[in-house]
Length: 426
Ligand code: HAX
Image (cartoon, helix red, strand yellow):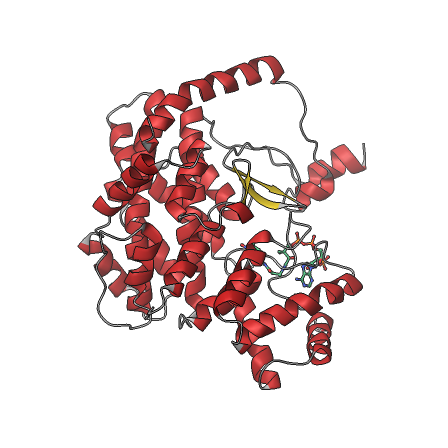
């Protein structure tokens, strides 16, 4: 039983039983406490939700179902989706079946293109992606089955079906956003013989005589697929999904968070920063010039994009994977060389500056330079690529939550007066 749905059907009863017994026997034990600083500070570090798809270890980075991301870089993104959901990589039958479903459902309804073409020509590609996918909400099988009165135990099945269909069309919508927004000419039809990532690359229409661009897209989709449950997009998708809003509502809500400059939009900020260095110095700066530029940036009150992380405390292994890819395919590109030089210089500057808890690069520090190298130069588009990938993680988490019967999210908020009365003046 290697097909994704069969595998999940086999696993879910055990998962439910395990959780039922954990809650019954250990439900009142404390796993975290919350300080005043955490309540005012984005709940950083508060352990208050469950996510089984992946884990971010401060000193190791992303681990998907027990496998470090650095060991998954040669896999296809759809294999990662299967892994996120089931905890196992698919065998040949499982992979082929999933690819067949992704291919079968890849046709984007015509009304999506009407919606996207009606948007203002200067709309941000992220707003277009969210709008385009949300316009397909009427296709939701989850909503239809819910309205027909499906049982709670069945929720995960239409959530899975919606998710596969959404992912199947997502690459087409995302490629369409690129071609419409940046006036690249006609839309390119999906090729049913290609894998999910390879097909996305061909629908973007970037010339790719070596096949390296398609490999970059596959790598990109693997590396950004998930980052545990508390980050803005995953947490938002989780919360919206917990109201039993269907996957279309939940995943687009998550993307709207990903569109923020401190989250997914950071990758376009990083490339802007790298290109501004290239322009200022007419190419790759010397070590001294780069060091001074970094200090000038910090002294003017700005952050160094691509460096630091809320959880990580080492070089992000996803950055390391992109850097290794760059060294293989475009080592002589000055934009890539600046990224590589920043990696040599910036951590020491940030350590001396003494503020950032993590002075090392995150995933966004290098990805834009690689896309730019292959001619995908519209950096407003980069967060869309991130979104296509992260949809796999958000949707996996959502399906598992529907399988586990996760309750609607409803933490208790307190006011500043409550803090004064109960903490300060107590
Ligand atoms: N450059 C300069 N200062 C930095 C910094 C950087 N790259 N990273 C952190 N700091 C500063 C913070 O601004 C903060 O300063 P204040 O005390 O004055 O507010 C201080 O160091 C402590 O911050 P932190 O605890 O180390 O980091 P946070 O968890 O608050 O924030 C961020 C994490 C990623 C938002 C932060 O490091 C940052 O702004 N980095 C630059 C933007 C960036 O690369 N974002 C992409 C993150 C990856 C991601 O999630 N992508 O989706």
